[in-house]
Image (cartoon, rainbow over all chains, first blue to last red; front, side, top):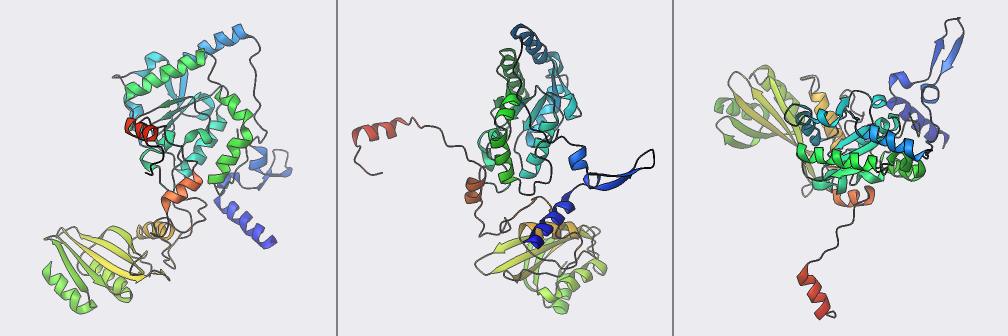
Length: 227
Length: 177
């Protein structure tokens, strides 16, 4: 049994990125100490749902959030090909206050553009958890709804809402940039109405989401909540 | 092209020659002579470009078919070398010393078909599937639909409002489908 667990640990260690492994670091005062990045650099505290305190202020904040959607530049499937025309002059999403951001920390919208392989889902979950509240998920294409043409694939998920809280689905295979813009407008309406509570849902049903995620990601080698 | 085929047929006991087109021919060779034939083709006949290495699962014959697709860039001809290996043992000699990219193909085949290539670098690292714990998914005895339904929480279908079905249920409730 101990051999078995040791093997699993070794295997986990093998998959771990070099910068996430345990190591000895010498501080500026010459004192050596051990750093375990998975424990020290990540926060594995559970997320907490936050209730709005003042309704008037919250309405104002929601209006402000809706008018400035910063999208994480993270393409997951074939649908990501629709994003460049959306941002370039023909469809020009910038006039709706939509723009791309390079890192999860700066962005508020995660677009899951098309099918998600299990390997990609792991990265998508990490990106989603690193985004700051409030955050929204826009699911693109029929693959995120019921698997689409990959419904019987061994490696792509069937429905996204079991793993991440989805605010707006845009159906189609693939949806055109117009459909995507309409999805963004729907998302704006939801935010302004105070119904886009994905981050709070995620915090409230955290155990359920984690159980679903861990059921399919079999080599889970990161903290449960890594923001 | 024909001279090359005649020559290697004599030297390597190749069988089942299939001329797909003027510039593309497939031949079958024994497992033991395969790497020697590929080396001969690469170094002497000028097939310097590896197009692909792929596998087919012939579950009825208990065999895997490996196809090494080689291209001669000066003569602009292709040759496909087919090798049949036993499905139970599923082991083939590695050819990563001939082309570096062969190691990637072999890594993929190891993951997707479970075909072993002893000595090939980084063979056991996960390629696309991380933490896969089932039989390799491209083997034909792997039921992908069943696996997906058991694993990925399939969404139940819509309620049907097909008028024919509705009237049938209403008027002939006892009738079997």
